[in-house]
Image (tube, rainbow, N blue to C red; front, top):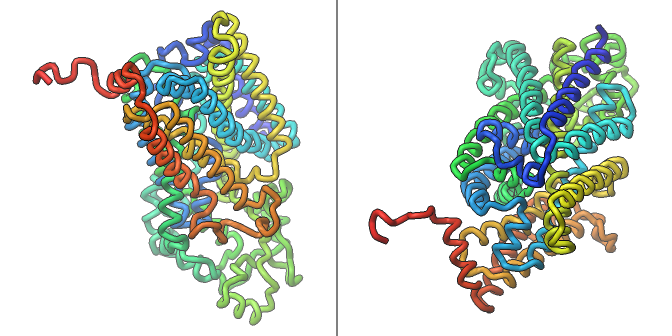
Length: 594
């Protein structure tokens, strides 16, 4: 069976499974559409949360970031994982105890203000829409490579699948579909990693293989990688290049941005009890850890494989030849990905070989002059292809390649569905029922939710087909917005009785505006003279990059909320009692008489 047919069968089987689950778990009420009827088992919810949280960024992009960023990219591991722990410990149980359906509903009730609720709706929609663009674009890329259709056609197919199980099932259908998607994505991620770890080190556990002896050199794999990078003029894998301030702020931005993402928070509204919210948080961390403990090994091993592909006999020998790339089966992955435009090479000096090295390194420039090289000839290597191409680079069986294709699509579709549900819930429950038509019937609200979901899918598909000029930075913008606007409001709403509606609204608006303006100025998206020259290596403020500014925006949010609240009247007594009831278990202190 050829690879295309195998890919089609495996991906088609997973899609049929998702649609079958959606039909079985069709939502029949608003409670089922928004919160799966609050009847999801903690283990199932933990698995669904893992799929919802581990987007295409985790499955497709993170290993590539680690592979080429080394030590500096460890911030992604610390930030995203730490953010989930923050969410599980500080927010999820209390929000479940509050008993509402959406994050804006919590903010509106806690701060006794429909205006606060509408501001939260705006923050949620902006953050979720920017985040979903990357997921839909990832669907198109995966389809175009593995099912040999155009990027646009792939997007339409992915949107149609999400439409069926999200519009039909709502949170109920999405939850059980995400359980299946988690199984698919984690299997697709770990099986190639096990194979590659065995190939390179003989150790079947990738996380341990990272520190085992490399079979070809007899040295530890990381030491082999460090030496190879040094030979080619690249920075050492374990060397830090970013500033301490920026790394700290970037990690914090990812952490609190993760904790403030509404599509993850609402997962904890689906369990029967507060204790189940805590339990499902623990299970989710276990399921997430399986991928996150594997990703560093995948990144390091893939980077080593790429360099040894380009230099089969080391830099002292000859680079891979154009003839080998065109004829040898083990190099077919280069030909396959070259067609997508995500990998390109150019024989600049006409010697029939592809020299891959850091041509900005002074040491390599001297060597290049000596050997007649004219610059790095692997001109494009999109880091997002790393996980998808890894099985091909390692020469793994065709069924593994098909499984990886299904896994990449599962990761993108699961998060896209969660984001789209958060958007549609905000429109139908918070905007329509909360402000426009409070007397709408349950049947009418359910229909409005389904229509809002369909419109959200259409908008997400359009943006995926026609991404804005800043599409490459949408994930950073989404995390920055969530960190600077929603997270402080939720945290203060749970743990401070003094923060009132005026403070919460002022804080959210201040954090949102400052963060968006900084990112847009930094990236030159306002088309202001002299700003288009700025880049992340040329920060506007100290050494703070645009991707790190969410943490600063959050601090501004906290400060403004505190100052405004203390300058105005205290919240009503019933609101203060509500806050206390959320944080303190019923009957606490009875045994001691306090």
